[in-house]
Amino acid sequence: MHVKDLYPVVQNLLGDKADKVTLALDEITVECRAENYFEIMKTLRDNEQAHFESLVDLCGVDYSAYKNEPWEGKRFAVVSQLVSVKNNQRIRVRVWAPDDDFPVVDSVVEIYNSADWYEREAFDLFGIMFNNHPDLRRILTDYGFVGHPFRKDFPISGYVEMRYDEAEKRVIYQPVTIEPREITPRIVREENYGG
Image (cartoon, rainbow, N blue to C red; front, side):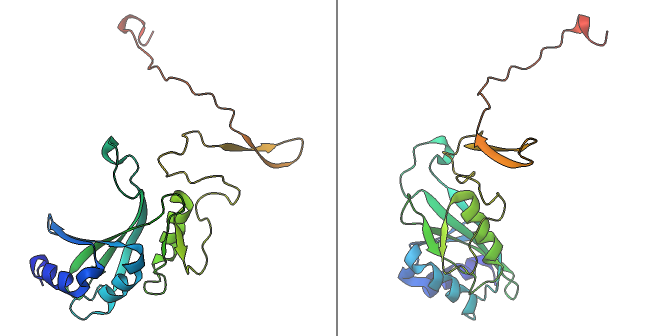
C-alpha cells in the first residue's frame, strides 16, 4: 500500500478522534488530544488495514521556544513513530499534554511494550507523566536529580552538582558553584605558532 492510499484510510479510521491528519513529504502525521491518544494508538495497531504493529520510537518535545519564536499552543507533546511491517509503512502520532504545568498523557505500554523505557525517558528528561505506566521512574538521571534537563527553561549548569566528599566518604549534592562565563576563542598568531 502506498502512503497516498494509506492517508484516506487513516483519516476515515480515526475520524473525529484525531484533531488533524496530515500528509507531507510522504509521511503521515496524526495529531490528537490526550483523551483520545490511547484509543488512537490501539486502533492503529489493531485495525487490519492500518496494522501498525510496532512502536519504534517515542519522545517528549518542549515546544516553548519552537523555531526560536513565540509559541502559541500547548507546550509539551509526546511524539510516537509506528511501523507496519505488513504494509511497509510508517506513521507519526503527536499527542498534546493538556496542562503545561503538569503534563500528563496515557501510557501506551499496554499496547506497545516497547514504549516502557521511552516513556520513562520522556518523564525523566521532560517531566511528562504517563498515566498507568507500570514503573514510571527516572532512567537516565540520578534519583536525587532536581528538575528535567531537556526542558527549554532548565539552566545549562543545572541546579545542583554532585561530588565525592573525601571527609564524609560519600557523594554529596550542593548548589551549583559554576559561575557563568563568556567563552572567548584563543587567537593563534602566525609569528608565535609552533615556536
